[in-house]
Length: 331
Image 1 (cartoon, rainbow, N blue to C red):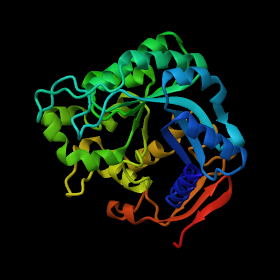
Image 2 (cartoon, rainbow, N blue to C red):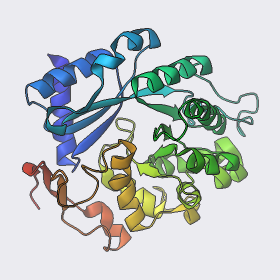
Image 3 (cartoon, rainbow, N blue to C red):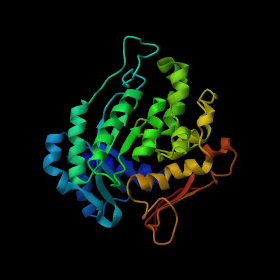
């Protein structure tokens, strides 16, 4: 029906923009069931890595059954659960340790109660799922890492790779915790440049400089930082997010705390090898090596070497999934 058409159209757009695997940051069980049916029919042209987003009551009954790793010739993996602990910064919904600079009566919103997420964490451990929590504000990130730390203590020495989606505004105390826990900072560089112009209004200069989109600080602390677009909040095209990672240049031409930029190579890894690692897929994808899936994107420009103003002009010539050309552009 209509939902299936939406999946097909979204797939076409992803392939046209050079994506070979898409991390779905939260679908209800009905949609996961649709993905499974499509996978069974060989109808998925894009590889999907899916987080389930549903109530604990519904998850209890279905987690064991819907979990899939490398299903349908590596086209569908369902091994993560999504939650949101706070809202967005723009709407003063991000949960902060200290009040908003431009709304001193507010510290934002805790959207999903901590005990609910703690219960999900127990389910995730029991059924071998990764937990992925949307956390934007510094309090949200602290509370999320507290939940992860308590859960990790139940599984000492186990490689869990739970993710913090956005990890956008951190108190400096949280930066080393990401590395120590092995929690993955799943970030979206393009948010920095699209939100950057008004972030200091919300947080003030000190908090913005110390903790807003601090990729470099996280990487230097030893944390794994991944990159994405947060589609449909931003366009699914990875190139603007890659450009944001290496320049932190906003639409007005100004740079948002340029000491936190990534090198070209780091930005490329954040979009490829690190994302594969964040989904336990580093043996299959993320680098071009013999024995891995032949998922290759060919661009019209070498984004590792062209002048930075030319990065955004690169076009997708070919998107190859499993050795098959699924999209070819006009180059």
